[in-house]
Amino acid sequence: MESLHSVHDIEAFPSSSPRASVEVIYTSDSICRQSWHVWGIILREFLDSRELIWRLILRDISARYRQSVLSYLWAIIPSIATVAVFVLLKTSGTIPISETPIPYVAYALWGISLWQLFTGCLASSTGSLAAAGSLVTKVNFPKVALVFASAGSPIFDFVVRLVPLAVIFTSYGVPFKWQTIFMPFTLAPLILLALGVGFVMSVANLVLRDVGNALGIALTLGMFITPVLYPPPFEWPFVLINIVNPVSPLLIASQDLVAYGGLTMSAAFISSWIFSLLVFLGGWRFFNLALPRVSQFA
Image (cartoon, rainbow, N blue to C red; front, side, top):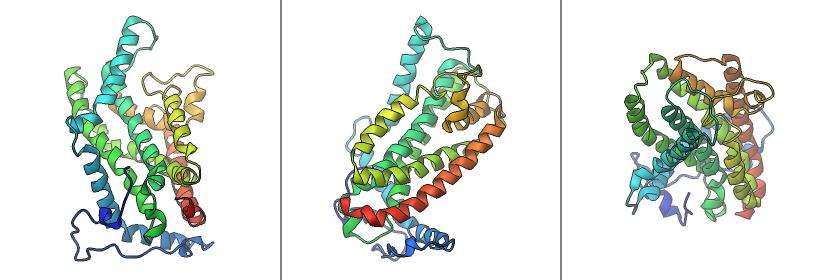
């Protein structure tokens, strides 16, 4: 996310409400109360800042594609290029990849799109506070809005990638299954998990900027230990990838809906759903507790 240079950046988009300026609704002491009642305060602050979050999302998307020749194609090109390389490696026998339930091109393109949704949300949320610069300390507003807004651009990119996905699926004769209407229930925990970890990582990255660089390396390695471009292994000990890695059951569930119209690992999916929700809530609480103590590093 590009740096926020002034309050005017936040107000760059017209508001549908009569209130044009950003209202001060954030106080650091209110979120540090050690009580279950704090969740009421946190949720109210989130609801009160939803207009600000929407403006930040629009600003991020506009800044990403403004003055770009290829424009929205940049949301598609990386995934297509990655899949093209793996198709070449698979065809040449360089990398042995077992048979997939749907044609490999469609399977890999869907898998990489899911992975980019997760990593995009995680990377953007991690860098959200650092990218905001002095806005974190000089403007009084709920800083959690920056983290939530950071997920807007990756989600928008994912929606854009659905267009070539539909073309590929149609070209390879992959039948549409009505169960795919439940796809949002498999995508939601991916986003929640990314934001939950992002809450913690954004604070850490504000204190130590090496965190962002280390995250990029970790995500690159993570793609190869997660069944993104290959079917999930079920032989021991490789099946541990699906057990230890909380992202695997979420990806597999989305792939299963597309390929089979049902879940092959429903218990693991439910466990990962619950885990993602707990990480999200825990990360959100940690963010509210830790940020007032480290905001001077912005």
